[in-house]
Image 1 (spheres, rainbow, N blue to C red):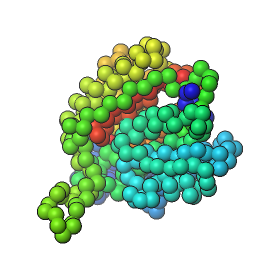
Image 2: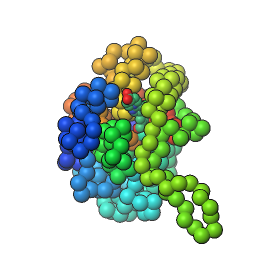
Image 3: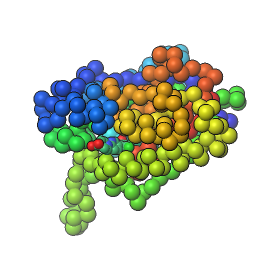
Image 4: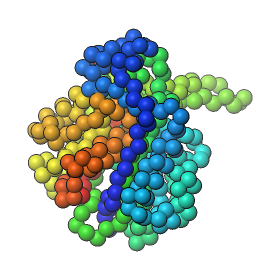
Length: 322
Ligand SMILES: O=C(O)C1CCN(c2ccc(-c3cc(CO)ccc3Cl)cn2)CC1
């Protein structure tokens, strides 16, 4: 069996924070930020946590499809910014929407989370499980050091997800390639908390905040993303020209355009939304997908590549016939 995407939805916090606004609370400016990242603004929560955004996505998916929550077999939330370690954000969603027959769990793969979540979902969809949700949800504003202008300007909050089902049709997930480079993981860290047990020395220093070695992650992305994407295309027996849209993780506009060039593909096959959303980690590919579905640019019959890359360090590419 294959995984088919039945519906998608997105939820961005109401509050929009522009570079101009940030320049009033830290030493930065719109030109510096936009020229390096392609970001003009981002959505930042005021009174919502990660589960609140994810619940809104799940509720939209049920309303759009008329599907009853009780018919869901599983809910996966991909996030690096959960409300808590326990309960998982997915479990909070499951309880809130009354998906009484669904098992639920969070998946932690940073900015590759949506693709890794789709891969796990496609593994679950079989004769035993027929329907589930994969939601990328982030409130990165809780992980950012708002005194650190090198990271505070990069990230945003948001959630997006899909309702997926088993399908016998010729559509759905054609092929994928997921890779992890754990020995490079220290180049993108966040959420390290200490162990204060009376029997331990210092095991790891407490540091809740984001830190990234931008240069290293940038060169990693420009090197490894094309390699992984090509493997997925070969497995799917699809040429780069056959793909209608490449939906990449929205970390940085220059990275997206350098990957498009590496692939010899026109820029308009690589839509971006970091200008208005910033980097929303696991939510970014889903946000881009749903925005393009809503605008009609993405529709049934097309061949789409979903590509996540980032913390871990991880890369994930999937080729879909939607
Ligand atoms: O030019 C500069 O000063 C810098 C140059 C480096 N930049 C970077 C570098 C890497 C990322 C990044 C982040 C994640 C985390 O989601 C995942 C994937 C990537 Cl490729 C984002 N920005 C920012 C501006």
